[in-house]
Image 1: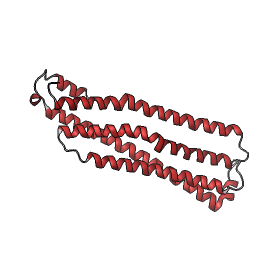
Image 2: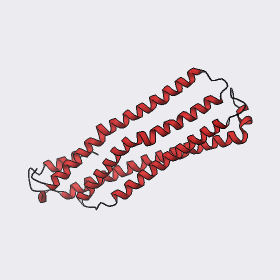
Image 3: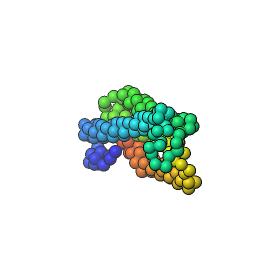
Image 4: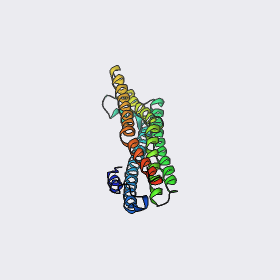
Length: 221
């Protein structure tokens, strides 16, 4: 959220008292930024929930396919074992369950935040509190999702790739090493990106909002 427009309005007042400020303009800016943030959150959550549902469904479909017609299915594919073990099927079912859990986690987190922001009124101060609540939510989610979302999804990915390797006829040892390296590397990359978004995006936004809220509460500051 950019607040350069609000700063320009604020600076143009030149120490004038709060009632002389153009609160209507500030209100419009905060509302517009809140609406932009809400649309962005909606798109992001819809994408994550959809990905989780699709991946979970694919895992379950693969498990069912192996259970029902495993030997014929694998025989039609190159360099595959003749049959899948019970552990292969259980691994795919577990991976699918984890993906569905991820979708549910994101859906419930989104619903809780939507209920929370509905409590704020439509005044300037209410919209500021709404913006602060959304920013706090994004900071908390970026931190919590690493352990409650990304690590489980990483485990689901490991189960999926590991099962594929198990189904291959005599997979080389280096394939498991490469799989582990790629999964750990991708997890580490996402964790770093989440922390950067907190440091470079959400925390500066929160400070700007808190400064504006403090200024509204005490115009002489």
